Length: 204
Image (tube, rainbow, N blue to C red):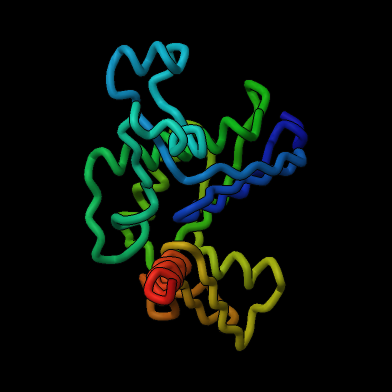
């Protein structure tokens, strides 16, 4: 087919937010939460849906088993462990993000998925597997490297990305970064928020 039938997607899987942008001009962000209905009453409440995403899942968390798939596990860190529930939630979140792109049936989807810097080999393969159902061709790259590449800072660059769950560091020296070029720290925005709340409570 012609080139116009290929849609390019960029997906940023963050601990707190997942964003998608497409070559057709779609830009969407969803909270990185996946909620599974607890019983048939909950299913009725949600009009027959089994899975609820994002803010809607958080707002209705009492009726759902809510998972924050990117808050732990091997997608986030090298020594993280993946439960079956976590794997399923990652897959469901990726599929939901792709659905937001509203790609017409029959068009080919090429995607780049940004993952935390220290996502393990298992974590990356879990992402590839999660995406394989809904994406025709996918590569996973580290988010800080994607930033450096997008800004054309390909030499002598240190990218520091402070997210909610992790602070990622990536040094770029003219090649694709290796695991040795990247570090992920678990001290990030969430920890700052918790400390701030604690100090406010102590003072007032």
